[in-house]
Length: 268
Image (cartoon, rainbow, N blue to C red; front, side, top):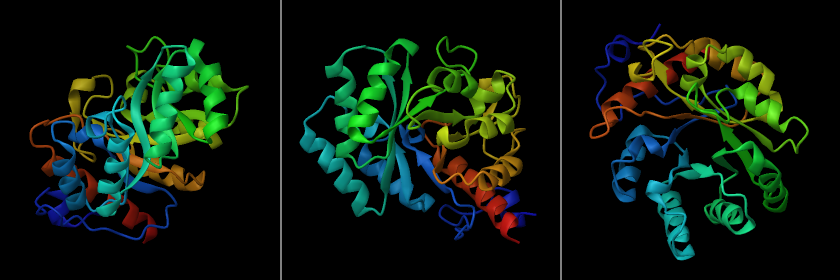
């Protein structure tokens, strides 16, 4: 059971209990959650959340920019104790070397292990070429029923099954459940191709407009966390908080308090 203050959502900012989890995976933030803020302010907010690794969205470091800006973005994050575990989500639908390689150079400059991406099936062979060249994972993001390319994690797995193992999934749990897919089975099926994870919650599992603070909806967070530990997932579980654009921090703090409470319960 969570502490009463956590359950009530009444913890002050920064008071969410941070634990040294034995889960194996890390809680982080997809900085798309903070797209309403420039990088310095976003970093301040990330420090309040007390996370150590993030998935950096282009809002906070432009891809088509001077590489010196990429270096500065990495320096700013690392100075705040933030490791850029991945970058994205990046749309990768232009099937030419210059366009695709630019994204890998960007990820490499920022020190990322992988790129969360939204490609087409046709571009995958060219992406695989650069995955091998740069040793940077392709974290293909599923976007739910509206996505003609990759609505579910299984659609990703079907497309990359004969490719390098670094070609894999970023499972977005909210988009996954909206397709009717079982998110627990999706985690099991992904296996070693599960490279990243976007965390959110929904009050109605078929309605993306019902997003809410993690723990206030119907997504089975404790069961997912338990399974991620069982399958020895070592990557990030990144909160992607897409609501309350102008004032996301209270809801993000509440979401982290719940997630950390779940992890603490797993250790008890």
